[in-house]
Length: 218
Image 1 (cartoon, one colour):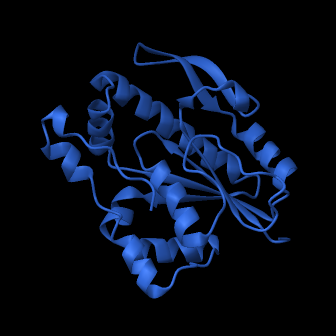
Image 2: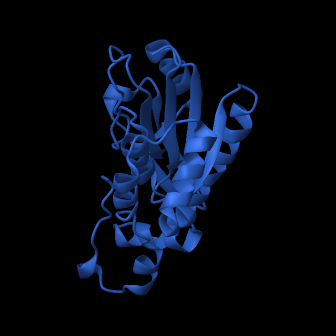
């Protein structure tokens, strides 16, 4: 595929990066995984690709070339042994492995209160998730500024728009990234129906025992 695209899904934790990667696979036919750092085989030259990293991620030795193991501080809180994406190294690696015609960075963003509630429901301390999210948003803003000077397209993806009107949001995203939807109208609507809003679920529910992880696989 001489005009292949690579979509890098990079966003703050608890903002829907797995869902965004699953959409690229299901609706646009991209090859890849929804889990952090799983890169498709360079031998596969037949399809567009999606690669996902949440920010920060769990540091693993096998992708240490593009993710740095650092200790960071925010509001007096220490975050140690976490992995922080080095975007220059990631883009360089993608170009070397896949020689794409275009690289797009897709950044899911979500209502702050819902991010915090989601993080707390998944075991983080309240002040820690607040500080971590602010670090992550700062990284995303700097990433956009940096990519604007490197001819790499960045795209915000509103979690709220996506989950409350999946059909419209995905259709607009398809046009923006120039990746056609590969599903029939029937299958498109069926898959869209599986994308369910969860903000109210996090805010309303007070019982940790009734927490159910989101289904990211469409």
